[in-house]
Amino acid sequence: MNLQKWKNRSLITDAEFASNMKLGYPVEAFCITTCKTVAYGKIEQIEGESVIIHGRRFKRNGCAFFGLISIPNIEAKSS
Image 1 (cartoon, rainbow, N blue to C red):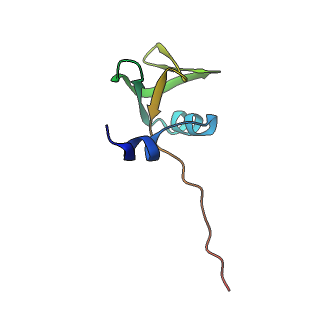
Image 2: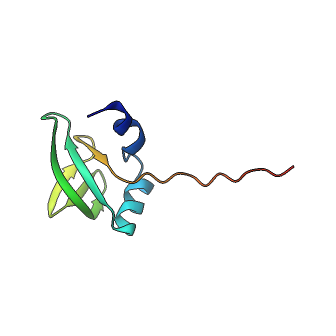
Image 3: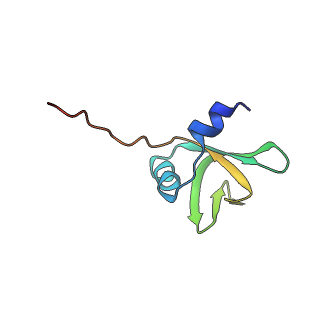
């Protein structure tokens, strides 16, 4: 896994998890201890510090989650 993926695709905030769930985009749950992908699919539910994918619960502090990151809309200033 390259560093670019960690920096540009990691889901961290509740808003990022919620937007992926709302839009129905799949996310990847990557186990930090085994260094393997443990799930890939749509988020079914978010419960505090855990995320449910395909009926399995994954703790947010034990896995890295990769998905679509919302980029804030930056408007150009007109002079």
